[in-house]
Structures are given as structure tokens and as C-alpha cells.
Image 1 (cartoon, one colour):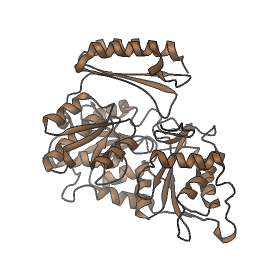
Image 2 (spheres, helix red, strand yellow):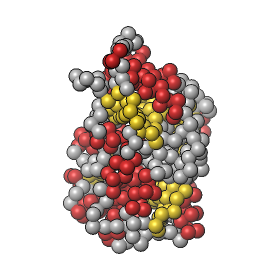
Image 3 (cartoon, one colour):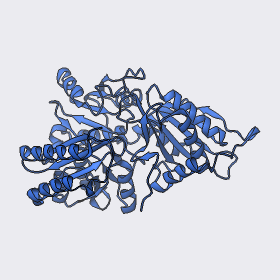
Image 4 (cartoon, one colour):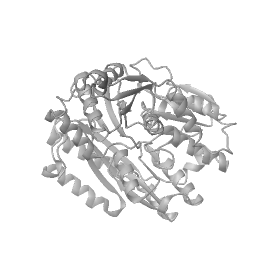
Length: 454
């Protein structure tokens, strides 16, 4: 049985900045624990430390660096860089670990800390549990190197350039983006420099929004959670397409020339089918999550492929990919993982793979996206005071069972807690949108009555 976590959720540690657990004090302890976990026999161990553009990033960066140095580790400071860029730099510089200060798509007042091992992969549950044990047991408290054994901090000035070159090498050498007019929304986040730079250097005509971070405007009415902005701009500017990243640049959502949103499920369908045609999709299998639309599963099956489902969270997608030897996976949110290129979800790598398919086939995004027809899917989010085990609450279970019985094999019901927020998420999928919307509303009311609003 998995132990109860005190700090880590589905994607690192997350919370309101300067409130537990996202305080400077806790960040320093995390830095010490991570440095202790990844210590080795070398004279010094090195940990890459990057962040997005949040105001609180300065506070947490200083605290984490202090904790790492106090345990004898050296810190490689790269400043604002997308989360997948940190994974790349960690491997590229042969560091022992990498840490990212980011709350991804959350508002600026939140922040988080994600951790990569030296191979660029996010830590498994067991290692996160070990970090918690180090902190709460006080095991590392008395271990304080002194004198020349205290760590140092170094600024890595060319990290963005290294990452940009890496990204361009994932795009086919025989293709360019010349002739494409692209609108890109960088969410005032970590990709605000590198995303426009890469697209322009590959030949695209680029119009940018969300590239003026001030510490407080990250994800503010922009980015992948607000594709309405990019949809409007694409139509107004007569662009061929638009792409919108989130605050830490690990996910991307597209819109076609008409402003229609193309989500992660459709992007996975486009990429998986192309890889099947090219013979490059390992075992003809795509790894998605329980949230992905049944339409994606159906189009893979029609093409002779298979879809495997993992729990929500890119870390669990990657774990399933590694376990099964698969090379493509992702989430409906636009968080796609191409293990042939990087070890974690990367919005820019996803964008470049989709753009390469468009350019190679000479087909607009709107036509490519038609390969998948999504079943109607309704989602509801209910804030809760406490994350009680709803499988033991009769009222909620009764509503779920009634919905599942009515849908039969022509739909799905998924109810789960968020791993990063005090909310319960409801997803119902079926052939008739009005019908499943009513079901979702009924279920939301049952949850609110049983668990109370947060």
C-alpha cells in the first residue's frame, strides 16, 4: 500500500507561494534532501536549477540553492527555461539531478518544485517518498559540510541557446517552416524567448503574444488554458495556425486557420498515425491517460494500432512508456512525450513534430485534425474541503453507477481528485452531449452535498 504523501502530488510539490509547503524554509530543506539523495563519490555533485517567470521564483531559487550548497552540492543556475529544457540541460551537462521551480499552468501566486534525476526523467514515487523521509525524519539535519566542502553556485549563461539548438535538431533537416504564418502564445512564461526564436530560425513568419512576463502575468488570460486568445488572433491576422504554450512550456494546444482548437488528443492522433505510416511508432502503440477521448482509441484501432491508458499525470505516462518500450504518449491537455527526442513532455518538440507533418504532407492543420472524431465529453470541477475516499460515500457511488449503467459500452465515467489542487474532477463521455451534461450536473450536485465546497 502506497504511503500517504506529505509534500509531493502528481507533479512535484505545489502550493501557494510563501505558504506551506511552498515556503523558503521548506525549499531549503528540499534542496538539502535532494542534494543528499543524489550525492555520489565525485568530489562534488551538481544539480541544475531553473524556473519559470513567477515573482516567487526568486525567493525559492535562492532557498533551494542555499540548501543544495549547504549539503556540499554545486548548483548550476539557468534562470527562466521551460521544464523540458531543464531535463535536457541536466542530461546535456551530465549533472546528477535537475530541479524546476514552476507551477506550470497555475496562476502566478502558486508555485511548485519538480525534480529530475540525472537521466532526465522525473522521480518515481519511491524516490519522492525518500525525500520526504529525509526531511521529516531529520536524517540529514546534522550533516553539514564545512570549509571547502560547502557547495558553489554557477550561472549557466548559454542554457537557452543550448536548448534552442537541441529543439531545432528535432525538426527534419530537409524541411523548413518557410511560407507558414504562425501566431504563438508563450503565456508570459518560461518559453517566452526560446519558442519564437526557434520558429523564426526555422523560417516561419511569427507573431507573438504572452512574451512580456512581469512576474505576475504568467498564464493570466493567456496560454494553453485560454486558447480563445490565440483563436481570435489567428483569424484576425489571417495566420495559417496558432500554438499556445503553458507557463513552463511542457504542453501546447494548437488552433487551425479558422480558429478551431486542436487539443492534445487530436495532436496525438495526427502524430501516432503518421508514425504508424512511417513505421516509427514502437509496437504501434500510443500511451494516453484515462482522460483521453474514446475517439482517439477508435482511430488508433482502425489504423492497426493500440492505445494503452495510464493514470493522469505525464510522469505516469512516461512510466508506462518505459515499462512497455513505447515512444509516444501524452495527455489531452497537450502534454505530449516523444521519447525519441526528450525524456518529458515538451510543448515545442510537440509543435515541431506537428509542423513537420504539415510541411511534409503539404496539408493544413485543419485537414490533418479530421483524422479523429471525438465523442462528446463533459467535464466538471468541484472544489472540496477534504479529499475523502468517495468510493465509500454511498450517495456519490449510487450516481456513478446509475450513469455507467445508462451509458453502457457507448461511454465512460471518470471521477478523480486533482493531484495538485483541492478539487474533484468529473468527466463523462458519451454519444449525446445534452444527456451526459445532465449526468455531469447531477454528479456535481451529489459531490457538493457529500463533500462540501472548498
